[in-house]
Length: 144
Picture 1 (spheres, rainbow, N blue to C red):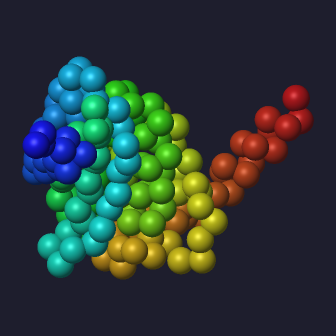
Picture 2 (cartoon, rainbow, N blue to C red; picture 1 turned 30 degrees about the vertical axis):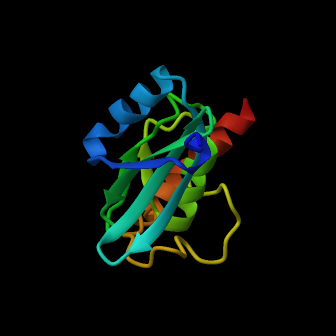
């Protein structure tokens, strides 16, 4: 009886700094992006990238700090990843460096900031002086 390829699930754990190389290698082997998901653990946030080729699923797992979560975006390799990465930003507070299409925390309309990661350090709101300067610049632009 032949081995069922659809039952093969390879999970490789990589460091944050090795994520792009691991995903790029799989892309070069012909794997397509299936999904990206995240879950909160006791010691951080686990992000799982699932890629598929010929009914074989390969997973790349990264653990990020839940207090200041940050990853390199894979949108330079798989452009549609911007959907997953913006979702994880809104729900877990994960910041993605070099994200091709960044909704800046407004991908979803949610009642509570980073609801699935209560440990995320929130960005400080702009000071009133900075907000006033920004409003003033916008008004000047509208007069032209």
